[in-house]
Length: 395
Image (cartoon, rainbow, N blue to C red; front, side, top):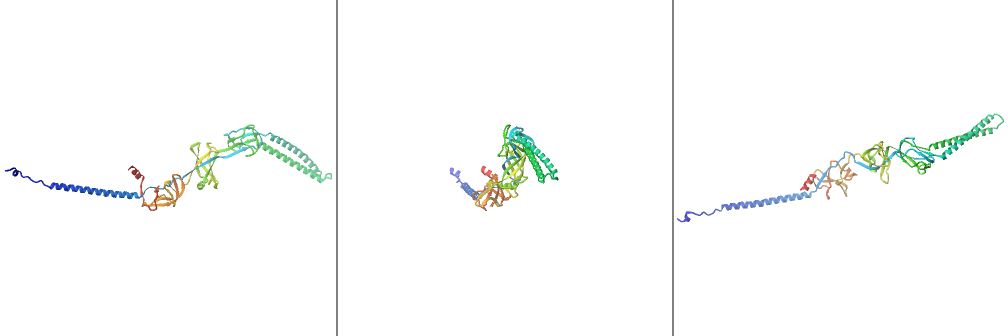
């Protein structure tokens, strides 16, 4: 028997090859299908992103209603409650002075004394004239009585009696005039003592011993002393016209001075000018501040801070939310569907980084902060929060 007949040869099967081909085809189809699905998904995402980018993103804020009113800070000046420049009413030489600047004085306390030699001589002469007039009046009175006693006899004429009586009357008038002149000079002599007109502090002394003193007021004579009452001080401030109605009698303000920056004083409005200065557009307001501690100095600078009342319909928004264009002053708001609506508003006060809106805006409105250019009424927008911005920046 031959070897070929003993071991017959079986031809190889093609079934595994067909199965492998089918599997490879399915894998290829799956890869193509997955690629098409992924490409379609990317295209959809791109379209969604493109559509989202076409809708503006905005930040939304709420108006703020302040619990307390805004503050108004203004420069002011301090003045003594009562201030009296003291001039001499008699001429002479300063004999002595008893109070220097900063000295507390009482009403009637002597500040200085003036020597008045010329006035003294006039007073001596006036007293001599009075004595002469009194002597003449005594003689005239005696003569008039004697002539009056002879009226009933035929020894004197009525004319002579009347002349003697009239002479006595004239002499008595001369006596009265001479006495009045003496009293005037005595009263003038008393002005040689310079006294304090009220309780206060000597805030100026412009004379010294031996100085020639000329009687007269400002512009004629020399100011000798100045006495000021400083237990209370007057505060004068120029208030802008639009704030004047909010500041009236009884309104209080906080006062600070440069020398005590960490200390505050309370001042109270006691009077207002009730008129507006046409040059500055302000009205003069007077306040009163207690200075029993003596820390405030008359004539000094002070800063006044008024706390104004809160307007019932006013709200505060950032200045970046306000739009100025052809429509005027407007603010972009959003409705419930995130559609834009521009509201015209009226600015009550500009506070720098924020503004107070007097009318046109409600506290419940949603406001677009820094609205994008080209935004129009009715546009749809998407609202982003601060967290969204941070996440976008991080991504």
